Length: 282
Image 1: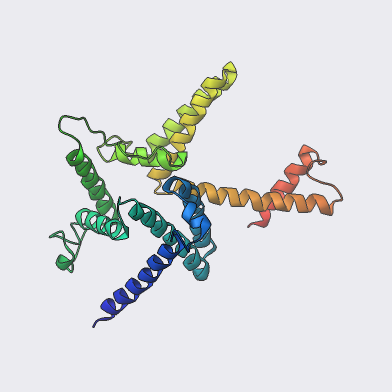
Image 2: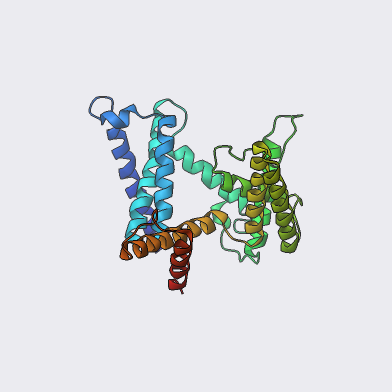
């Protein structure tokens, strides 16, 4: 037995134990009242919380914390599958089979015959080429799945419930996959400058709805700029949030040391504290 086979067996045993545990928690007689009460819709908010906790753990860089939070997220997947299995919709095996089939189909450069047995041939594709091929394959899948005669858009199935920043990037990426995109970063910067100018005009008119409209366009263009910079806008904003939090806490501390508070400090003093907080980062 190879190390790969041994690890696969260990993974299977661990997942089997988790599936059994989930069945016990959902047992109608001896199970947990809270777990039995849950439905597919009721789980969604918990799933979002677990996803964010995984991201926090990754950013903290603690392997133990990442492992713990990934376990919580895996439990969510098993939970959904168990509820669906009880109503005869699908089970965890169907979930795993579906993703295996999907990944085999979307990685022809790794599995040329569309099965695991064809693995082992070297791939010369760059990450950028792989990403472009991925989008082309997904577009073809959408067209193949559409009912006869029904029009298909590359923007189909971009979930409306996604966070706005993430959805903006997804929409832009889909459009770019069929050639609708600025070829140069400089053009995106010009577009951003134009959108800011339009926002300034809207502010001058005092038209609230127009201001919201133009601010949305500015934010959408910022996401587009991040995509061209090959930077995740959500990650960039999270880092900016952290920088602001760190600096503001230093401002609060400086105010306390001066025997005052942020609320009681004048604008010039707060600006001085802010600059000091920024300089301390360097």
